[in-house]
Image (cartoon, rainbow, N blue to C red; front, side, top):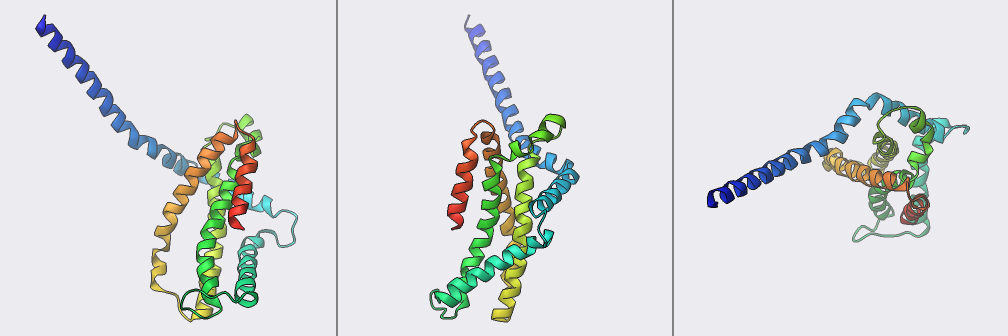
Length: 219
């Protein structure tokens, strides 16, 4: 009888250890599945991002040039308000450009984040005709918003660096670390967009609230 109990307990422990080992092996795969799906469908995503940018500025005289003009006009507006009108200073830097450069360095990533997050809650509903008629991975749709926002941010960073070179006469060597800083930002934005896109299908009001919150954060 005692031998049977020991055998039974060892059998339960072995089954539990097998399940635990399978769970540990499944966790890395769960994190790799989105990356593999994005890589397999990269051509489709490239076309959808291009379409998203072209549709956004369809009918305007500038067309896709507004992808470059929007961050340029935004930074010019902030420079005029904080540097010329308010003459805001930052710390020991008494120049007009010190606070503006510091402000824009943090504002550009936030604008890319808020642009993607503000649309992610209803992005599945925007593409409902594709979802109903065509079979394709839904997880790529929110990532398209992230890439679209990253394109705008890339133009903004380019303008920022040109302005920094014109104002300060040089660009710091620490700019080489910028791609490494963008990786966690893009991953975090994609994670938030996935959550909001999945929830927004069932909670329609989430789209309006997330868009409002992102606009309030930008202001």
